[in-house]
Image (tube, rainbow, N blue to C red; front, side):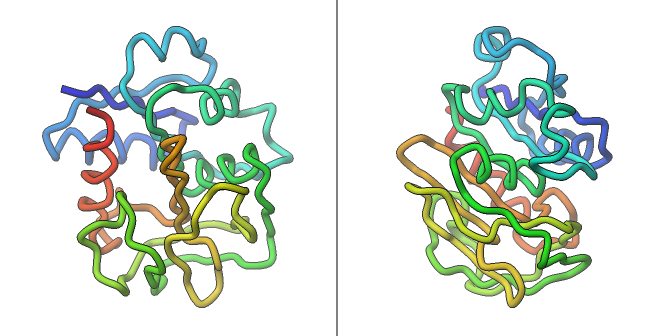
Length: 188
């Protein structure tokens, strides 16, 4: 069975992601962002990077090795909220602070890929962010948008990198378990 690492920046969402995965029957482990890349590569099959209240790029030094994880971890990586923004930034995307979203937001799927398979064309997702991805990095496909944010979800299947601006681990997000399960299936 795959072991999913959840990068722990101390935020409540990181613990909730781990718990949600375990409730779904998967093995998840919280890891500190200062763990060396070679250690987590030996121990984990895939990685989820969520985050906390920090902003990219200003708070990059506080994220430890997380930028290296995004770029160099050999298995699939899912960025959630701050992790989504970090992924976009590290691969050359553009971020903005002009489009905050909080609470329930209507998300529309543009391209049903691996992680959004089985999700309705429109669904409500729970959001809590001031920064968002304005332009996806080269090689990434925009998978979903909202009325405010153009890049609600993105993927680069070739390098197995996926990002969502919303929080699939929160019960207020419709199809959140489906999205997490779709990602974990990539870890095997």
